[in-house]
Image (cartoon, rainbow, N blue to C red; front, side):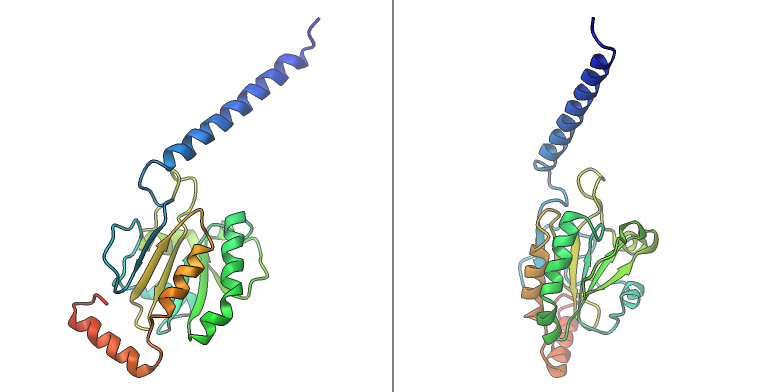
Length: 209
């Protein structure tokens, strides 16, 4: 006699196997299409590339977002992530936290942005702000990754005028956001005179650094 629990157990095992199969198919498909899960980087002075980003180099970061982040009129690195306790997000936050002294020595502030659902608590020293209702993401145009399952992981470096000088999008390589940001920061003006010169050159070239 077959126990009633056996068919139930077999059904559960089959459903679990199907779930894993669907997940594997989704991840495989994501690797074959040009979506935001693939690394995209663009910096001032580099050749223009097709970048799946909310903003591009030369664009102005929204003033309201800069004020919310407390970096209006300042050089800053602004990174968007999902949740404080998510594995990849934790790696990204920790990497930015470890590099905080380097950013500070360059006069650059670092700010992370996530929505209320992503607030889980962290000991990181970098500033983290809440994006109510994903208002900032929406205004910038940051798209979700992996068929809408993951929030876009994007990082922007802006100069003191609020102009974007570097963009980076990589969902599955969180530490790369710090490395790319440091390279972009190294190219920012080191003095008020250099900064003024850069803004003049940007104005002459039509707003493209």
